Image (cartoon, protein in one colour):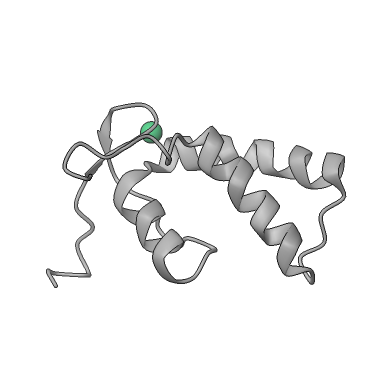
Length: 89
Ligand SMILES: [Zn+2]
């Protein structure tokens, strides 16, 4: 744990820029942490624009956990989260 009040820049998995990470990821747990640690705010803003279209197009319903899974899948793809991390296995 470091100083939480002072966000430190992260290396974005999508654009490769060093920038501030996603502030309040809407996903709990691991995925939220991953977003915070690997995705910059600019890329997140881009996803949020696209997310609206994905939700409308696929008629996703947030009451349905499967819809959240589908949305998360699209999000991971868009944000390139499934690319192996440099230090990962
Ligand atoms: Zn980025």
